[in-house]
Length: 355
Image (cartoon, rainbow, N blue to C red; front, side):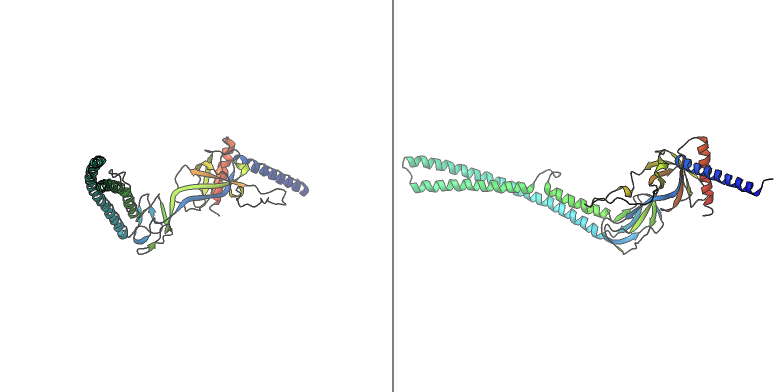
């Protein structure tokens, strides 16, 4: 029979051995089979707004509606936008008609220029003849001056008509409609009006769930102002681990995930990426001197880094963004590590029935 002192000593030894065994286990486990409860389900949330302002004519969804990419969410009253399209079409057609009028004016100016050039040529011939007669003193000086003035006036008329013709050609622009600057300006206005008309129908840009809907027919939607949120169906699981726990973690490392919403179930996953850093590692460029951290602690808190995990199987239902989870990493492929890591994550999944 053991004395009470011997029993007490035995329990002390057992307790110390158990403590040392657990201490060693947690150190080894934190390196080769790390686990963190700091994991969150993230889903991209897109604020949805109209690209043009107008009154809402119809709303095709409601809160918590499931939508597919390309589904119409809501429509604005298209009437003022159709009117602008028609006005732009009319302006473009008027520009084409104006070019036709300019073509007619150019043709008339060319005919007038030819006539003026013939008159100038004839006046030059008359002036040359009078100049020769003047040397023989067969015409008076005044007659010679009149002929010279007539010839100079004809030349000036030719120059004026050439300038007018050049201005008409510049105003007319290229005859190729695709290269005509004036027509391109009105085509751009028409395309913009048509684009604005198409934007009166707002579509879902991804599969997801509608949330925080604040629209109803008659509501005035301002462009760029979010009227609802589209929560993407694609999930991204982010998990925060201590730095030393990620020494042997890489892209493709096997993982297991337990969700608070599904107690008792373990989902297979793998690591897809890790963040390049955290906010604490980013200095604001503000022109001020750096401020080193001060701490009186001998052992400071370990820094946590974020990794991203992707499931290899589908969930029974979509989880809301912000749902909590626990992530287990398999940094070692040995049988003992696999056994203890599986035991560890399954124990956590069962504990979710309690808390």
